[in-house]
Amino acid sequence: MSSSATSLFEDFQQLVAQVPEALQPVIVAAAGAVPFIEGEGAAAIGIFGGLNPVVAAIAAATGNFLCVTLLVLLGSRARTALVGRSYDTSDGRRSKRRQKFQHAFERYGVPGVSLLGPLLVPTQFTATALVTSGVRVLAWQAAAIAVWTTPSRRP
Image 1 (cartoon, rainbow, N blue to C red):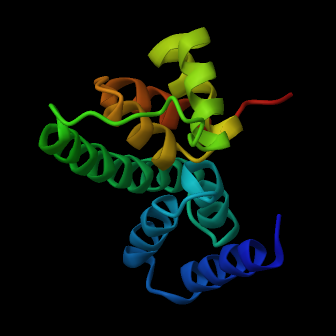
Image 2: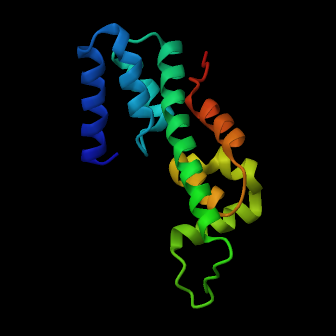
Image 3: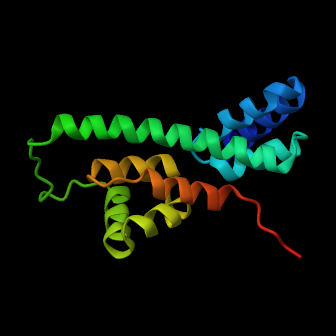
């Protein structure tokens, strides 16, 4: 993790520990909306900040999902506005990230990209790329956020 990401993570953790208990889930939800922290990082922030693990996971997943939902809705509106316009990608100017996404999408489909997306890029980017491709994604993104945010049970 980069020093700026570590600092942001620590800042959220300190903030959770300093605010009144009733506001702690709100801070955790806000952390869940940040790319690269997302649900799993925000849940850890909440737990280390003193929140009940279940409350931390629910708040983190909620913040992550609300952010993804907003991006999907905005992406959908942008796509609707652009439908009918054509663009030429035959000149090889597509970004490496977009090519990586497109390859994963063709290989794994919406469920695979939604569930495996956090390994490649943050869920906010995955959801936006999916919706701009014309795919409905919120249900799969909700499932992916829940899977990645829920703490695993290890013996």
